[in-house]
Amino acid sequence: MLKAVVFLYVFHIVYTGVFTGVMIRAILLKINYIRGLYVMNKLVKEIEQLKKEKNAVILAHYYVNDEVQEIADYIGDSYYLAKVAREVDAKTIVFCGVSFMGESAKILNPNKTVLMPDMSADCPMAHMAQVEKIEEMRENYDDLAVVCYINSTAELKCHSDVCVTSSNAVKIVKSLPNKNIFFIPDENLGRHVAKQIPEKNIILNKGFCHVHVSMTADNLKAIKEKYPKALVLAHPECKQEVLDLADYIGSTSGIINYATESDNEEFIICTESGVGYELRTKNPNKKFYFAGTKHFCPNMKLNTVEKVCHVLKTGKNEGGENEIWITTSVVEASLDIDFDYLFTELQDLNSLFQRMGRCNRKGKKPIDETNCFVYTKIDSNLISNGSRGFIDRTMYNLSKEAISEVDGVISES
Ligand code: 13P
Ligand code: SF4
Image 1 (cartoon, protein in one colour):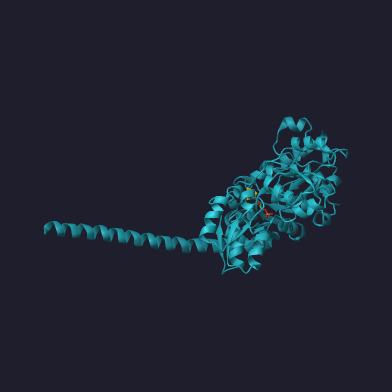
Image 2: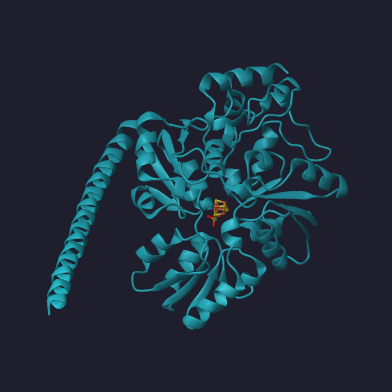
C-alpha cells in the first residue's frame, strides 16, 4: 500500500513537472513566433522605406527562400530576370540569386548599382568549363559555335559565341548556322538540347548542377507509386534517367506555367524546392511533391530578408562590398551597345563582347586587353603578365580603390 502511495506521489510530481515543462516550452515557442513576426514586419517596412529612398528594386529567382520572394518586386527564372534587369528604371538593383545572375544584370546595366545580399552565393556549375578546352575545340572544328548556358561565369561567356537560358536553348541552337556546337557548362541541358536537334553535332561538357543531379529515377518511381496520378515536371538540368520519366521538361517558369494551366491536380516536381512558393501561390488547391531529398540549392538560400535590408541600408555586409563592379572601360564600351539584340532571336551576347573588342572566335579580332573585366583575384603575377581580366565572385570583395588600381594596371599592360 505504502509503495503504491509513494509511486503515485512520485508519478504526480514527475507528470506535473513534465506537463509544466511542455506548457512552458509551448508558450515560449509561441512568444518566439510572435516576436519573429514582429521583427519580420519591421524589416519589411524598413525595406519598403529604403527602396523608396534609394530608388531600388528587388529581383528574386524562384529558388530563393519564400520570405525573400514575398518581398521581391520581380520574381522569375533566369531569362525573365535578365530581361527585367535590363528594363527597370530604378537606379539600384538588389539581385537575390547567385553571382552569375548579378553579373548578367550588371553587364546589361553597367550604369546601375547592382547589389547582392550575399556575395558568397555562387553557382558551382557556373565554373564547370575551361577556357583552354574551348580554345582546343575551336582548333578542332572550323565552324564551331560555343553555346554558353547563362549559368556560367562572365569569363566563360566572354569566350563563347552565344548565351542561352533553359527557356530558349533549343530555339537558339536550332537557329544557329553552325553544324558543330560546343555546349557549356551543363552536360544535362546540352544533352536535352542535342536530342531535339539531331541534325547538329552537339559536343557536351561535363558540368552539372548538384541539386538537379541529386534526383534519380528511383526517387521518382517511389513517389509515383505513392501518387500514381501525379504528372512529372522536370527541369532540363536533371539527369537523362529522370527526364525519360517526365511528362513535361522545361525551365522553372515553364514548370510553373505547365502546372498552373494543367487540369491535373497532383505533380511531382523535379527542380529546386523554391519553386514551391510560386506553385502554391498560383495553385492553392493543387498538390506538389518534390523528388529526392537534396532539392535545396544552398547558395540560393543564402539570400535572406535581413541581408536584403542590410545591403540596402549600407551597400555592404560583414563580408565586405556587396556591389558588383565592372571597369570603366567596360562601362564606356557598353554605352553604345544595342541591348535589344540580346533579347531578339539569337540573343547573341557575343555581339556585346565583339563590340567591346572581346571576340576571340577563330580568325576574328583578338581580345583587346584594355577592355577587360576586372580580374577575379588580385593576382600580381597574372596582372603584370598582362593576362586577361574577368569579373568573378572573388572580385566582389575588392574595394573600389583596389578595383581602380587593378583597372589601371591592366590598362597599362
Ligand atoms: P532557370 O531559372 O533558367 O530555369 O534556371 C534554373 C537554375 O538552375 C538557376 O540557377
Ligand atoms: Fe547552380 Fe544548381 Fe543552384 Fe541553380 S540550382 S544556382 S544551377 S547549383
